[in-house]
Each structure stands twice: as structure tokens, then as C-alpha cells.
Amino acid sequence: MGSGKHGAITRAAHSIGRCRGFTLVEVVTVSAMLAVLAAMAAPSFAAWHRKERIESSARALLASFAYARSEAMRRADIVVVCPVAAAGQCERAGGRRRGDRVASWSSGWAVMAGEGERRRLLRGHTGLRDVAILGSAANVRFTPPAGQVVGGFRSFEVMGNGAGAYAHGEQYGRCIAVAAGGRARIAEGRCGARA
Image (cartoon, rainbow, N blue to C red; front, top):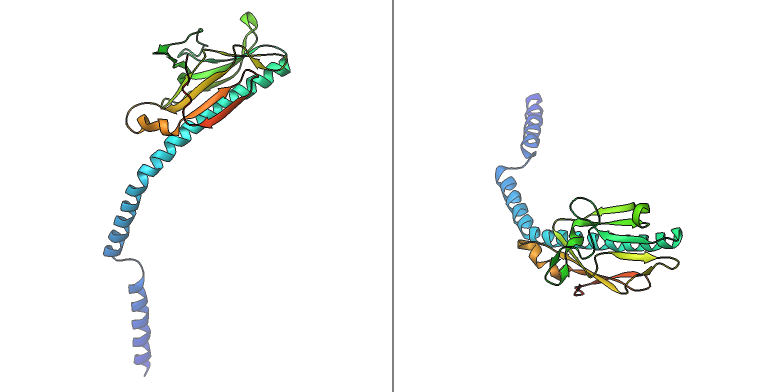
């Protein structure tokens, strides 16, 4: 009788030990299913990533315009948002042209207060290499007392840049419009920023 109980306990312990873990077939099957799901999700993730980079660049430029306008009113001085050249300085009026578009906003931009010798950097933003920003102006000047824009209405296109997946970034493009009163707004799609 004692050996019967001992044998049942041993068999139970042995069968519990065998049930733990996964077989090689189960692991390979689950790994294959995960690989298929990852392959299906990759294009969606790439499109989402492209859209988010365009959106974040557009929102950063919009925030810079709003900041420049508020600083022009607060300081009672001219505040300029200008495209930045590779050296980190504001580009001269006109910028580098590609056809009839000013393409220099893609390198980044700076918010500068004052003019001439008094000019100083308030904020700077570096552009993303895979996002193109095409603007209708080389500089956007906000003047006191109400933060109006010198030169009237301005528009800026933010879209994907480059070959491959980013060449189709136009579908995720954003348009930033700066009214003569200095207020900026953002809209989905392209706006046809012209020089």
C-alpha cells in the first residue's frame, strides 16, 4: 500500500513537470504569426511616423509665429521669425530659391528681437531633414503695438521631403497661414506657398 501511494505521487509530480513550458512547434508557430503581424503593421507605422513628423514641424512653426507676435506686443519692439542658414544665422531676404518657392525654411528658423546691433536671439528651432517647409516669405516681421505682420498675408507649406516613402508626404501636408494682423492658423493639406 505504501508503495502504491508513493508511485501515484511520483507519477503526479512527473506529469506536472512535463506540462510546464512550450514545445518547439508552439514557439515556432507563435513566432511566425508575430512576424506576419509585424510585417503587416510596418507600412502603417511608417505612414504614421511620417505624418507625425510633418505635424510636429508644422506645430513648432505655428508656435514660433505665436510667440513672436506676443513678444512684439510685450516688448513693444519688432520681432522677426527668419529661416536659418546652415551656419545658424538668419538668411538674407530672398533665401535660396527653387523655381518660384523659397525652400530655406527646411533648415530651421529663429525668433529674433530688435533690429541691427540690438538684434538678439529669443528662440531657435532646427528643421527635420525629411520634412520640407516652403514659405512665401524670407522673413516674417511682427511689429508693435498689436503684432501685425509687415507685408501682409504669408503662407507656409509643411510636407514630406525626399525620395521613397517621404515622396508621398504631400498627402499629410499642412498649410500655415499668417494673416496681416499677425495671427497664424494651421490647416490640413497643401496651400501652394508662393514667393
